[in-house]
Length: 368
Ligand SMILES: *Cc1c(COP(=O)(O)O)cnc(C)c1O
Image 1 (spheres, protein in one colour):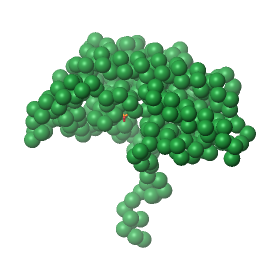
Image 2: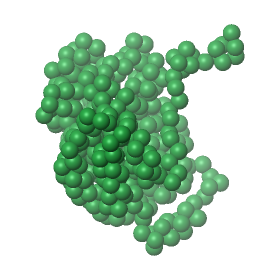
Image 3: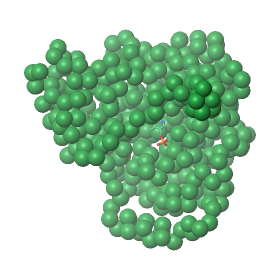
Image 4: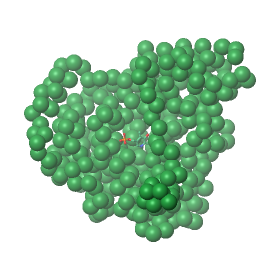
């Protein structure tokens, strides 16, 4: 056996690396990024703040000010604290590590955010996926009965519900989520992942006090700070204390800390950007729905899921045509059977949205 085979786990050997395509020169609509920067004066002021950061020092690992700013600015209920992660990806990894008892299982509806299953497997947890509804008109809604049956059968230690869901954009029924939280009860956590909260009309954050097993997870990424990598989650104090034990002590670096504190003092700017993206989402939904051969699904996030159903082109052909025209979206058609011929497109500025729409129309009308 070679060195690699001697040391690397077989399940890791079998994985393919998470592929992020090179987007240089493309209209980038594949990763749910906020297209807007901060206004110039604020960027200058941020530069001065960052210049004053003591980069020679380790961060103070309690992160008291940043946590207090998050709790005060982002609607964390009184008496509740947060745990911070280097992106919510790291929070998901911390949950997996802390809950990976032998034989334990993680459950989520499918299709959903791929990191839940990947992180579970990395920690040796079994992942159980429950397909979302497929019936026309109810597509991508929660199959509540199937979820409750799977919970009774598998007693998962963690159940993830992305609210709204990625890659479908669906805002699951809040009453169904409540039933799921109660059905899981003391045997597991339910993590409501609100990565798209800035674009969603509802949240479970204010409802934390109603449940002893609910964790609400969020990130600053989709709000416009994907590059600084900062996620946070709140839940019962005793539970957060245990999860925090597996957090790498200096996981939030001093530059991220300073940039986030600055951003939280200017939340109004980010809120205004999110509001224009929500307006664009409505406008784009209507324009796309009017295109023959395109089905657009309702979205409470900053992206739209489309299904291509024309006689001459499938989703992958349209995806390739868009690439030819220097527009990069995400081809999710192979992710799950329910997503056949589906593309996921970030909602962006009116200019970038127009470029996408033109490229899509050109692709659909070209007869090849
Ligand atoms: C984008 C996304 C995240 C990841 O957020 P980071 O904080 O950038 O790691 C988490 N959950 C869902 C559902 C997402 O779509």
